[in-house]
Amino acid sequence: MARGVYQALYPVYLVQEDRERHEFAVDLGAEPPVAADGAAVDRRYARRLTLHRLHQAIFRPKVLRAYESRCALCRLRHAPLLDAAHILPDHHRRGEPVVPNGLAMCKIHHAAYDANIIGIRPDRVVEVREDILIEIDGPMLRHGLQAMHESAIFVPRSHRDRPDPTRLEERYAEFRAAA
Ligand SMILES: [Zn+2]
Image (cartoon, rainbow, N blue to C red; front, side, top):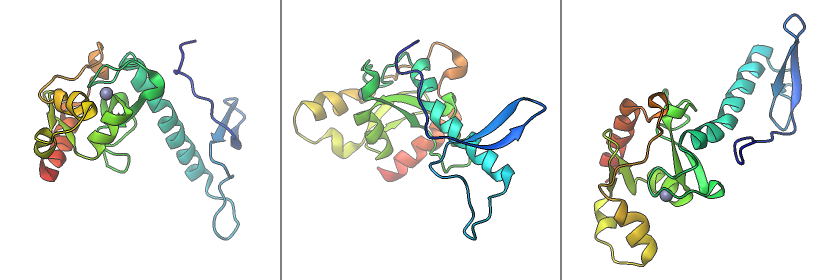
């Protein structure tokens, strides 16, 4: 078993049984789904919610595996320090938790990407925001951020796992607008 690939999820609730297919629908929430008036929530909704949570939960191990547990920017290879960053966010129409919408990043680079301190162009080259580039500070700023400017990101070997250029483009436009 590869370390950091599996993730335990608990507690879970069995919310639906499909006897013919010998399947259960599992809700990963802390509470069984109940509406405000105390009635059980629509089963189809519960199942959708369950699938959504399941997809979110397996996003990280899938992205980390595709990137060989390396930060796409600095190549750091310590899974506990890595995240699966979304290119387009979860609430976006195309923000699905799928590998082409993900990038393995260390905690610092993930936070910097989300804060538009760094941007990634559709040709997979990193840009560091202008004001950060001219700042003078210690080694984290110099080596961790400024040195990333105009470097190419590390991508998975498999083409289907590589970041989707159209999603990168849309996210990069947001970085440019914020800069
Ligand atoms: Zn990094």
